[in-house]
Every structure is written in structure tokens, then in C-alpha cells.
Image 1: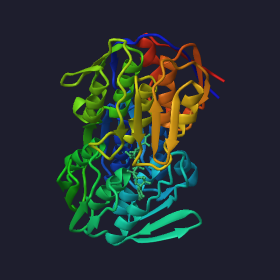
Image 2: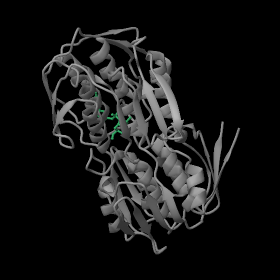
Image 3: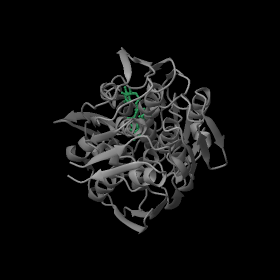
Length: 419
Ligand code: EPU
């Protein structure tokens, strides 16, 4: 298995480009199943998860072709199959995003029920409850969810929790349903707005974009589209914290600072300078220890759970004690024990972690457990004294495009060793 080796201590500086958002690309690719016409996606990140959803679409009848390294044409003249098999769902839970489009366009779907996950239970009951309200018959057979409906009808759906992929799935189902659907307590992540905007360009009727109250008037059919995927706010945020933990001065280009406000506000509180341009963010640290700042993760526009592990690295080295509370997932502290092995002083108490800042972290062999945990270990390695060896980095490849190259361009001493 590949490993990443980091010689810590380099102060990062320079410019780095932000890639397209993984968590926007996945629902956008799934949404192309809603039409038989060609859809062109620009700013597609070349990631393992994007390859996986591409494979899934291929099994369902889509033809995918890259025009250049980040422009992808997808066309699904006919749905040839209706199944998201266990092997794909097991490697990527977001495969469940094909449920809404398959049901809306083809009237049926058979999707492997995702099992447990390293960061929490992550059930899909709210997706299924919503589909049922829209008239789908839902049953469970040998680990698969079977969904069937002649044509979905509009419904008023109040989500118990603002689930991101749940909102996306129901939105994709509702655009072709008969009549009006209202999704209340919808998630408001920018990736959902990106999906809604593309659906509108395909001919859908959606109001309330960016709010927790989406109103969708179903249409008979949708057409092809050309759409540019929004920048990856979590990648940008990770690079911002890479600058902060190394006492660096880094400008991230091609990003959307408005999507990163919760992070920028907290980062300034730690004493780091954050300068926002229209599509750039500069993070500049004076190299002094940062102040400890507590955070609580929350759905957008709150502090993203996908930045919690990376924030913990900054807090591990801060002056003072901070509390990091995780409210979105119940088990997202797998990185803590690895960080403690590098000399951090973190204690978990239920859904919170008490982080007592230390002066130095020291390099060590560590193991990645999920995507964002991997990113946190890379940041810890950049800031630590000595050499850090991060294994199980296949997690990282699911969601960060060319991370080692990007960090190397900023002066990091980081390399991948092929197994
Ligand atoms: N939940 C339920 N029932 C459901 C759906 C969700 O109880 O039917 C619970 C989950 O167990 C969790 C909470 O609701 O405790 C929120 O989960 P959500 O459904 O919003 O998460 P998701 O849609 O599965 C997306 C991102 C995650 C990100 C979360 C939260 C994609 C493909 N994935 O997951 O991204 O952490 O929203 O913002 O968009 C990542 O990129 O590393 C990642 C994990």
C-alpha cells in the first residue's frame, strides 16, 4: 500500500489552485441520469470517488468521455440497469445518490444498503422516508433497498435532520415528479445549491435555493446542460490550515471565500490573517503560536464537520486549551489517537475533544482512517518535527486532487512511496 512521507517544519508559501468540489461532482454526475441528452461538466476533480461514480453510471447505461483533463461529457440515452451493487456502495456511500434519478426517470432502483462507516452509523432512512412520501414502494431484500413507483408525485417532506445527500436525492427525484414537492429543513450546503442550479439549467423548476425550504414543481422531462462545478471548499479549507499550522503565507486561487466564512472567522480569532478576494483567500501567519479557539461542528453555514479533524491539528499546537465538539457524526474522532501518538494532548469526552495545546508535535508513523482524518495527519506531519509516515492513504485519494503536488509547490517536503 502507498504511503506518504513528510519531513516536517517547512513554512509553506506561494499560490495554489483549488480544484472542483468532490461533494458537488458526485450529485451532479448522478443528476445527469435524469436526461437522455448530453451533459457537460467542467472543473471535474480527478478523484477516486469520481471514478467510482463514473463506473456506477457506466453500469446504468451512461457513456462518459473526458474532453480534456477536467471536462467530462456524460450521456445516458437509455437506462440499461437499475442497480447500485454492493461492491460500489461499499467503497463509496455516495453511490446512493443514483436512487433519486433512477426512480424519477425509470420508476425503479435497487441499491445496496450502505453498512456502517468509520465516522458514524450514517443510515439513509430519511432518504427512504422521503421517497415513500412521494409514492415510492420501498422494500428491503438481501441487503438491497428496492424502490418502485410508476411516477412519483409531489409531497411535503419535513426532514428530521438536514441530511446533505438526502436533500440531494429527494431534490433529484422531485424535479420529474408529478406536482409540487416541498422539502422542509433541507440542508443548505453550497453543493446542494450547485446541484439545484444545474437542474434549473436542465429545465427544472426549483425555488428557495440556498434556504432550508425548497419548493420544486415537477416537469415532464429535462434537457442536456453545460455546468461548471463549484470549487472544493473543504480542499481550500485544508490548504488554509496547512498554511496556518506551518506559520506560512499561502494564497488559494479559484476558490469561493463566501463558502468558507465559518472557517475564516475562527481562523482570524486564532491570530492568523485571512484576506479574502473575489475568488482567492490568502492565509498569513506570523509564525507565532496561535490562540486556542473552540469550535462546534454544525450543518452549513456552521463550522463544517469535514474540517473538524484539520482544525484539531491547529489547536493541538495552539497556546491554551480548546474544546472541539462534533454534532454531525457520532464517531468522528478516529484521528485523535494518531495525533496523540505524535505528541498532541487530546482527551475525548463523548462528542467533544478537549485539546490542550503543546509546543511541538513529533513525526511518527500514523494510519489514516477516513478521508478528512488523512488530511489532518498530513497537516500534523507538515507541522511536526522530524519525519511522519502516513499509511492507508487510499482514503486521501478519494477526495484530494494531487495534494502532494500542491503542497510540494508550496515548499512542503512531502512524497509518496509506492508499495
Ligand atoms: N442521517 C440520518 N439518516 C439519514 C441521513 C443522515 O440519521 O437518512 C444522519 C447521519 O447519520 C449524520 C447526519 O444525519 O449523523 C448528517 O449526515 P448527512 O446525510 O448530511 O451526510 P451525508 O450526506 O452522508 C455529506 C458529505 C459528507 C459530509 C456530510 C456532512 C457527500 C457525498 N458527503 O454526507 O462528506 O461530512 O454530508 O456535511 O456530500 C467527506 O467528504 O469526507 C464527507 C464525509
